[in-house]
Picture 1: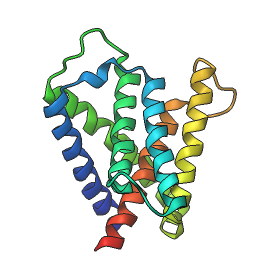
Picture 2: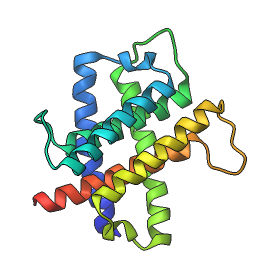
Picture 3: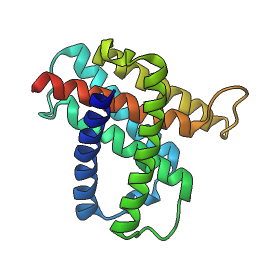
Picture 4: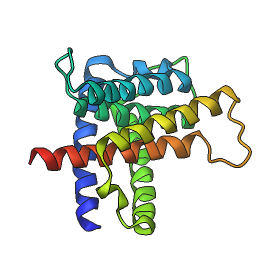
Length: 181
């Protein structure tokens, strides 16, 4: 499992770099988004991945790897929005955003380590297409919970699903990195 932890950290570094570069370009304009809007943005990315997987080609010359990175980053944004709420004041310092980003990524990693222990790294035997389908299922669950104003009877909440989405996306990125090595 130490291999998984190191690979996870490498993916975190990749995702964080993209996130910080986009912060340089756009600032924290994403702070205006409500979590259902972030959920829909993640859904669009996951659906594009599935479409490319099914068709075998893409007309827009961007592979699925940037889409998985986008899913990770939008999921972290959603976790930040759940924590802080949508604010009229959009600008946040890069240091504050980076601290929040790292906090939520580390929470997701801690959850991954616990589940990875219990499940014995079963994800390594999964197909990337299956990881995509699970992400889409989790997103549909999140949308249903959001439509129910956050109420659940026996299920985990939105935050648990976002953490799972982060982790399944990281697993897909690890598998993609291994395939290209």
